[in-house]
Length: 61
Image (tube, rainbow, N blue to C red; front, side):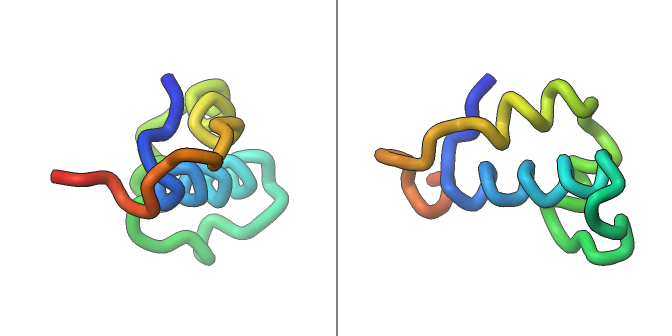
């Protein structure tokens, strides 16, 4: 499942980085913190690898 906005893709990338131990979990905020706790590494990879071209900045509604 691809990300539906640039913000969602960026949050998934941050959460994935923490899952892999590249950044500290305590540095996560907002959506990325929730994604870290509720999604698997594979799910985060799918969101994070979404191409940003053509995505809106934020998800509508």
